[in-house]
Image 1 (spheres, rainbow, N blue to C red):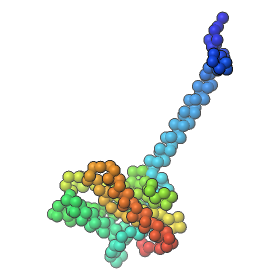
Image 2 (spheres, helix red, strand yellow):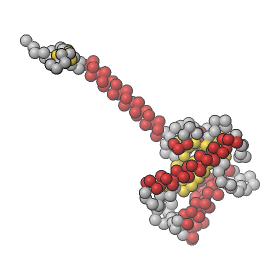
Image 3 (cartoon, rainbow, N blue to C red):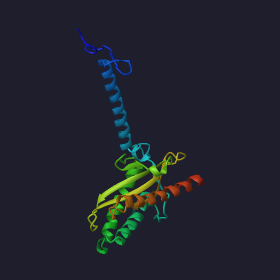
Length: 229
């Protein structure tokens, strides 16, 4: 004679409550495993989409877009493409910044500037061609909320610099819905990581991002003027 609970599927009476308790059956275990697998699959998919950097960005779709610069005033030579003009402008900005930080010698100034110009121009051309890498180079700007804005993260080894050899460049773009074939460069800067303090570094970058968001709001309120290509 079997005791209570000795037979699979038999009821066990709880001595305190008096209610019958069914031991887990094979079907119950399978159901738990299935539910776990579903949750795991959803987690993996959610993480994968996050790592993809939200492929809504127009610069990762493999389709050419019109790149416009809406940020700081820059000078363009006659017939010069905007990507080259922005690269030429920012190369000088970056060189002066690295020099001010004491990371660039005057004798290496021009070489650094030329290398930076070529680097940025190539990146912006890839952005205009829709060939940037989601997750690796492009992520949504969290601080932007529902505004369609993305951060371009570019890293490079720069031997012209002293001390910190790994340089980080940041570019923020806007992709207004009313102009579906355009991306607007809003702001670009060198990420200052000299302190080594994560909180200070993050706060400094947030200030730069807020400049791009502020410009977005100004252009949004004015209806997004069309920029020449």
